Length: 48
Image 1 (cartoon, rainbow, N blue to C red):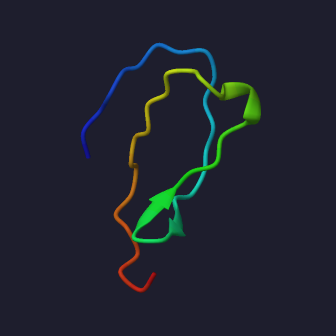
Image 2 (tube, helix red, strand yellow; image 1 turned 90 degrees about the vertical axis):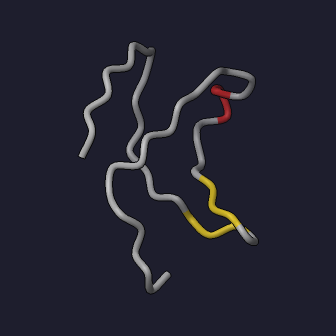
């Protein structure tokens, strides 16, 4: 696993959920319009 150092304002833990042919992660409404970064920290489950 690689290590990343990111400076920011807030951190959330979540799970990428199926969305059509893609996946999405829900963040708080107050984050709308903010720049965000998403880091995958595990391998996807092939059964999903």
